[in-house]
Length: 364
Image 1 (tube, rainbow, N blue to C red):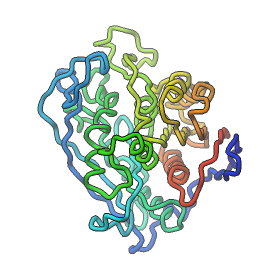
Image 2: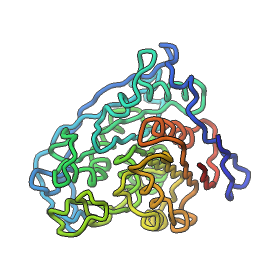
Image 3: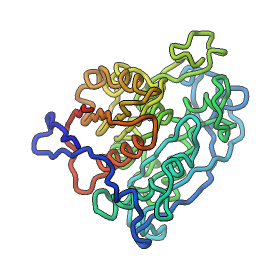
């Protein structure tokens, strides 16, 4: 356990970052359990087989760094955790939404099956059930998307020049124009993306959070804060600093108008450096309420990218970053670290009756 240091939030409380309690991995009584549902939705914004960007929006070549075409939509799937007692007919009860992104070889099932099951339920669902049952967070909806915005989104392989890999770096458009509108039109959420007024945007973003593991952690950082997109060196004809045949191209436009809370757990090597992410935070109109970045101390895949992404970030972001948690715990590139991240991130983003402090936490 570590106590966060209050860095300027006068009169505010801080929150302990703790290991997931052992009992939170277990199932709650049946009547207190949420449910997992699978939904399909139409996607108009994705990378097609010709590596073009298919979109139903007015988006320029300069913005996306490739040819933009208007073609047919594709159908994708996501899994959704609905909290205990969720009733679609009860439109007066609203919910926060957390989008949890998977890794490079994963899909919408990775968070569910990755850490196994206990008491006839997914462990990640048990964690949310327990947080809600114990009054630590408001009941929330959790969306587990397919993070590849590409025509071949079901391909979980890693081949650097394949379009499914390129699709990871364009997932922000699918979120903005396809997935968020679908979720907020079909579920009782506080946020309503249809309300694009300044007041509506300011309200909506505080009721959404985005986080991910490994490649999904990279997406949460780069796509939220205007980090770099990547493409295969086969097409960029430029060197890869990571030795994985991927080279950075252009910066993403950022999603701070959509999300006030961002988390990255063992963020992948193509994550942008802290100075780039910090500048993106500083340049946004709205402040980031919470940024939570964590990694396992024994993670041979992501510890270097974790260090690169947190170095200089707070200094670059300045007053536009209200709370920044840098958390290194014992562990590798695994669900021991990722469940710890999801548990603490949810507690911080959507705590019940909790006022967020201005903090920087750094411990190992």
